[in-house]
Image (tube, rainbow, N blue to C red; front, side, top):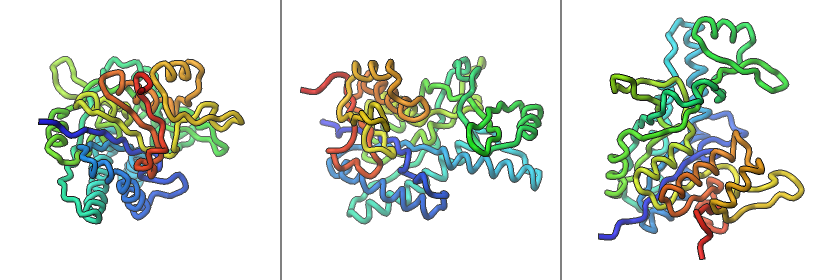
Length: 320
């Protein structure tokens, strides 16, 4: 029996929250609805679908609520893994509800399953010795020093006009996805599965073979790409806030790249063409996916998915 094509879609950038918005639930719901409209054509073409998503602004807000609750009401702060799980539940629920409304609009009946997903990292990953990912609110130097003394948090100075100090945490590479077989089974049965939200809840396996929380965050594109590999997905899509990958970005000789293969990517990475904090992880996640059996990766703007004239297509070699 021939199986449907399986696609993993990672929602990020302006898929959930536009850069000029403050993040009200009304804004996020409308953005989510508009983005999910674009995946209907994949469903109509018979694809099985798994959705991953980012959580940067949302988990940042959860951390700030944590901080305010502790300062004002002496409510103990929750660790980062719990905050990521909270964001998975909230965003996953929003995606499920908006997607049910999108499917109803198009007369499509499908079950949608949201999974709070733990993702395993290596406790010896070099990222734990060099935390770089900025999370939460901006503090004064005095506040940051006190939090370092009280909680062992690490901080880096913000390079902005108003300055301040912000907490940094490790961002280790994902090495396996818990319940990946269930994700694949549910998707292959025709359900739409929401998984690895925010890169997944970071955990590691200790000396007793027990699951332990990691005070870290995982890149959602790498986690989604890894999930795609593990479940045998055919295609991997990153929906972000630009319609193409560019070289010489924002320069006079800027050039959009409609197609990239492995050799191109390695050349451009060596040249430093892709910004480390934004496009480089996306490019590397897409390359990882096709290197490990995926047929194609695509990076495109969140509302341009259906228009195939948009988007950068990434394969191991150029297709004939």
